[in-house]
Amino acid sequence: MSEQSSAAATTQCAACHRDNPPSARFCASCGAPVGHAPQKRPYAAQPNESVASFALVSTVMPYASAQSARTYKLAFLIGVAIPIIAVLLGQPSFALVTAAFVVPVVFILYLYDVNLWEDQPVPVVLGAFVLSGVLAVGFTLAWRAWLQSIPGAATDSAFGVFNLWGFLIPNVIVPIVAVILMLVGPMFLASRPKFDDLMDGLTFGVVSGVAYACFETLTLNWLVIGGGTGGANLAVWLPVIVNLAFLKPIVYGCAVGIAAAEFSGLGEGYDGFSGRFIVRTVEAMVILILFNGGLYLTGLLSGTTGLILGMVWALLVAGAVILRLRTVLQRALVEGALEAAAREGSSKWSSGPDDFCAECEMPLLVDAMFCVNCGASVRARSKDARHAHASAAPQGAGDAAGSTGADSEGGAA
Ligand SMILES: [Zn+2]
Ligand SMILES: [Zn+2]
Image 1 (tube, rainbow, N blue to C red):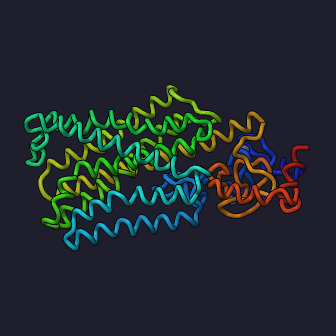
Image 2 (spheres, rainbow, N blue to C red):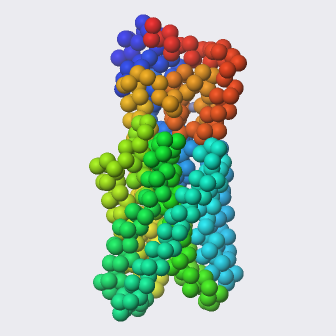
């Protein structure tokens, strides 16, 4: 098997036929594993993880490096601990408000941290967040009034009685309209040339979904929040906080992120209203219907059984939707790189001279889409990481890249 490679001092990729340096473990063009010891393809946005993983941070925050991901995980843990402590101290309304803002706040910190939209992060991030928030409050007040105008629709479920309109309005009709409202901001931004990358579309979608979920929760629970303390029963409040304040923004954010990424599409420029985008939009609606419908039905069961079943259901849906978004992102990074390799031109995301991997800090080959050492996607680096190396580049043309850079160029000759 290995006889054929004895002549050439390069490792050819079986998937895209690029010649990689002999030490390469992953193809620089398409990220496929190469070399003598075959290995599994890692998750391109975070090579320490496999694609099939429930890791939340590297899914909704693909630009984060392994190091900064630890900070966001810690922030999430603290953010979940605060409302639980507040419930134990008998302050459920304070707990609900803080819990509703955990995911949005950590996410906004991440967007500033990776400097995603360069010189104009404040208007872009706030615009995306506020627009979805305003739409959420307005629409929630409207359908809530509609629900309350139908006898029993708003109240029957509290007594364990199934009400057809009480089920259909909040769990089927509202999710369908809400997904369209959540996509308004991301579609507007992603259609501008500055933000037309798939990663931008995905991030806009997640921001919008997270904001919508946060403000819908606050609007629906406004009476509870205004009503001060009351009975602070942890068994009642813990599932509410975990489901509504923590899992719901994750489910909404991932579902809308999947659809918005498809609006941007793989290559340069945005794809717009393609057939694939419509399929993903329907998929996002189905995810929201399953999530909310399941919570409604488990809520009909009385006592702790219903609460526990509801929490298990919400966790299952959140886990499935995280896996789904990871698969979409992985396929986009790999297919986008293969597409660029087939065109044989350099894509706008590929590495420049004297460029380094943001994950393992090894030098990148020139015009690489993946790190040959760890398999990380060059496209999933923050723009700050890109600029740091771009500004350091002009002085030494090629001597630092030395061994690895020269090998790839020589292999093609
Ligand atoms: Zn390849
Ligand atoms: Zn690397």
